[in-house]
Image 1 (cartoon, rainbow, N blue to C red):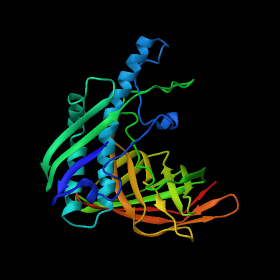
Image 2: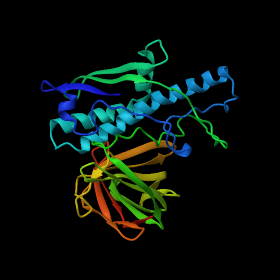
Image 3: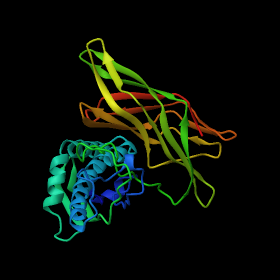
Image 4: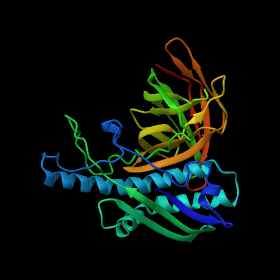
Length: 327
């Protein structure tokens, strides 16, 4: 899957640094509770006939996840660009895709090939200074499905909309052991003025994961970093409040570590996401302060850091995390 467009006679791949315009994903290896593609239907009864129905539901969710992932990755791509006409165009395109997920889904279905492999496109056209914009899916396939011993009940195929296809590391690297958050960290969010004054909120982050990866050359990467809240993040001022449920902050695309174990400011790209009134909301941005990753005996410490991001309305948000400990 990926985007196609031209600007100043150059194609998408000449402008977007990361994620790349053309990408390949495999799924089905993640934890069941974090599934990227799901079927919300009756549990499989073991028959071929019902298996075909489960695959059909999975295919429907696959199309939705492609559209959601495309929107998020445009945000990540824009965050890596210098200010200017290209960044402005990509941000406006991201807003357009985010506001037209239903149209994206409908067009990918309408333009699909007749066989069992999803081969389709959504032609957006000339918008925001970008010419011939299209979201293209070369091949998407549901090759099988897994039913755990104790499947969880679902309400709809939107239950997994907080999960998206994440861009891989830009280079081949060997992943190390997956570490878990020990204790808790704190998240503070300060948003733009709403009805006269800024909104602010805090929440505890009690679960998460951290993973390093190493290239053949010895260069090290922060391959995965995520923090999750068990409760709601309430953003409020004296006039009202809004709650972000299922809140989490996640690294996208990895971040290269220096020899001293530091991620430089601007090198790590995160998404803060959750549900507001049942609808998924995301803001994407880069670290404005360095992130230190220090290894002790059987434990890893990551320093406090800060993100400054713009939402889809062009408003400024400041996101701060305290130091964390991992084992």
